[in-house]
Image: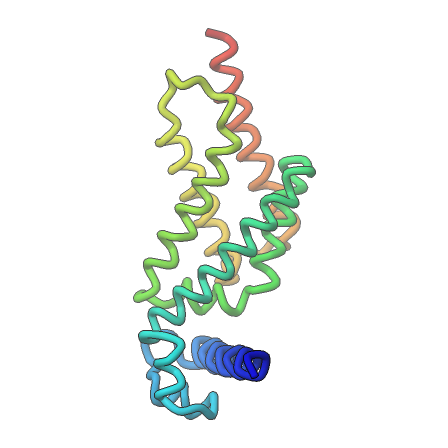
Length: 189
């Protein structure tokens, strides 16, 4: 009996998320209502509220899943060079471009930007492990994190004329130069 219930739960969640993502792309986050979403998903509002508190909770759940996927991807790219890993990372955003486009074009999804920035800065922190504790890396992480977030946002909003691989390689090279310089400054002292 629990397998049937688990499948029903998974089916309902998938229907809700699919309807949400379609509406996110069609009308934008601000215009989404639970009523219209449940109609599109062909479920009751009661079913929606069994799974989520509101549309913000639903968005947070989807973002949590994407952060988990990005974390897994970061583990895989540890085996690669810095530039190659950055290219792989950018392809994740290419594969999910419509979703990120909708998020970056909606004002009320600012928490998503903050969470993504925090995630990027956390990943950069691992790259800065060779920098002396005497140097405050907070500004460096924020600078690089904002730069990466800005480039990703500009890419998904089609503000570049270059292809993803060229953009990703250039970002990877720039980050690598900054990190190597920060690490070498310590070795010179």
